[in-house]
Length: 127
Image (spheres, rainbow, N blue to C red):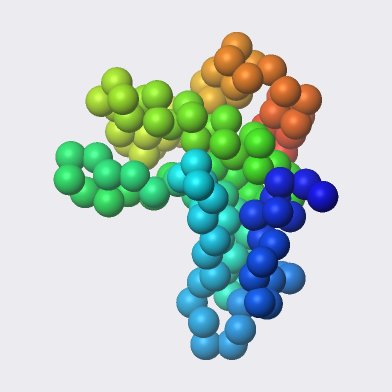
């Protein structure tokens, strides 16, 4: 069983593709700070919630199943490293554009976490 499955395991009613009618979102957090979110329309994605200059921010790390939990955790580590340097990832993503930000993230993943599930193909699939 994959880690993504383990993350979702233990839920009374794990989400298939949509949330219950009237619900806004379904969210399950992993201990590393990565959260799995299911929207009412069936979108499934990985998110990282953080605080920058006292304000709550949220960065989408990729969509599931294109981006695995391991890859999302690697992207989370990249974002945490930027935060430690005093860089707001959301502003950086807006400045570079989505593709430029993902390219930088992919280069960092290759240099620091060379894993097959975080290959260029799987990372570009999340764009």
